[in-house]
Image (cartoon, rainbow, N blue to C red; front, top):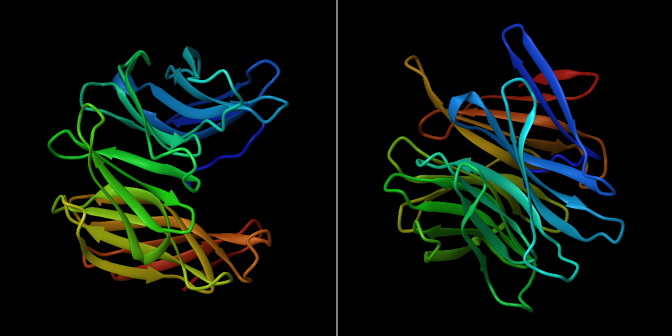
Length: 287
């Protein structure tokens, strides 16, 4: 799950010699930033949520200029009651708007124009279902969207949505119990999902799930040691090399609250490891 749990939304930009830091705070609330994307004209859009003293949460969207000024602030809420409303991922769409994923106990998607005006908002699932959420969403070839996430007590989840928010298919992959955290379109326009798969209550590994455009599994892989989590995957677009990078966390124990390391894996086009490295606050090691 893409999360930056901080008391204020903090955005950093380093562009050649231009460096700035923005701290955003919503009055009488704690503010959380979870994902960011580059928009048209090399500006930025950031999503997250705000939380009040009663632990009630509302969705947050910010647009930020290339010199670090907030030019747009949107707070979204569709209920007068206390909601668990969090945005977790944002993706710039072909029309310069945004597709945003998150959770309000159920799976949530919001599509907006470039000014944050709502095109459609959808919640998928029923009241009373186990807790669910969409950790990542992308726009794929053809203009549809693919999202990945989780549902309590189920496997990695993925769904395909058309341009008006209708679900085209949705699958829980019970053979890969765990959480889908990040998704990317591969070189052949199939989909790669990374996240965490559980072997027991104490052991987990980074999972890689390859599916086609109809949601059918092509292959699965696992990486890492005793306790690992894949948080994000990107495709390498270079003239000299192709492959993928996964970043996540690795723990030496089975306790996620123990000290852990940042864990990087570089894969080739066949999803085999080229190198893997761990980074901690005081030490660095590579295998």
